[in-house]
Image (cartoon, rainbow, N blue to C red; front, side, top):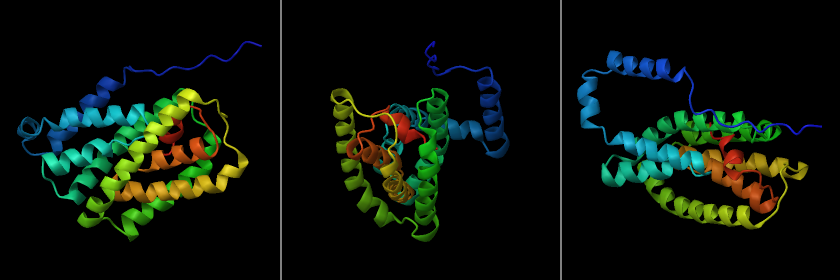
Amino acid sequence: MTPARTRHFRYWSPWLLPFAALWIAGIYAIVPDAGGLIARNWIFIPIGVAGAVVGNISAVGGGIVFIPCLIFIFHLPPVAALKIALATQSLGMTSGAVGWLQKNAVPLHALKIAVPGLLAGSTVSSLVFTPNALLVKLLFGPVSILLGVLTLVFSRTAKTAKGRTDIPAEARRPLFFAAVLGGLLTGWVAVGEGEVVAALLMLAYGVLKRPPALAWAWCC
């Protein structure tokens, strides 16, 4: 039998031009003095690009870039920085998820387990135990350090180990609770879902099929 061809990312589509034009038209229609607003805040464009690049090449969310920049460079309130990071990542994470799904790199059966957990955790952290300035400040530093260490471990594991590419049956319940925890963290500090899920699957169950792909599926 002929092996199935691997699908590659499509970086360009004719729909991108009308999509971008629609966004620009919407900004100018809704925002007063949109040109002046862009001129005064253009620096957020490269920050957004940097956050999207970091998010799409790793399991680390773009919040790892957005929140420190917005809080320490632009001196925005922590909760405002969190809301901006989450709103921005909603687009970037969706784009990344579509790309990995298009490449057939995501174990779709795992989504049935992880997505409900993500929705449960993020709902609690967004609507029940909502973030405040103190919570964002207290959690972001330790969580970021922990996720940075995990990312280094992911890289070493992916390079040196030969693991499985399927999600084992015994991982289903832990995967659900890991997704809940990741959803809680994401709602509070804009990072955590992809890293927690990737840590569980890679380190506990030896799943090594494209760690970013595994993480991005439940980040959109």
